[in-house]
Image (cartoon, rainbow, N blue to C red; front, side, top):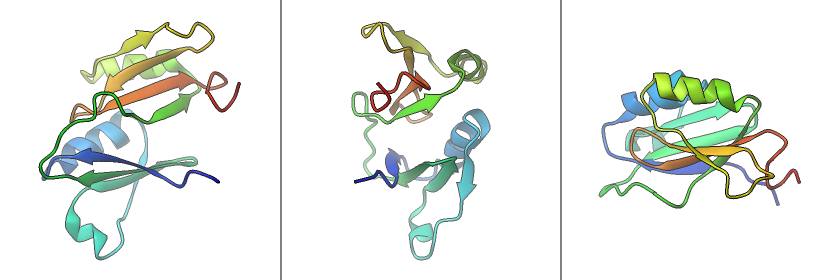
Length: 123
């Protein structure tokens, strides 16, 4: 079995904020949503093998515990990008063999970033 994509939820009408975060801060490329899904709102993004769908959910409730986790080559560079863009960065040392931190997207959804090589599927 392989993972195809991850979906996060967002409030209606917040596509500009999703684009600013996922494309602007994280450097993901937006992909066109196919018809008829494009009429539902939301955005689709990709970077390398990572595919992320951000879909409208009404009523919207941010995910504070459930989260995707992405592998990143340079966590320090990403940390600075997030901080400069006004997003929180919370380092987690609970597992000393894993270098990682959490942030929240513009909608309050939790997202984890791990140093590439420290991923749970890599050790």
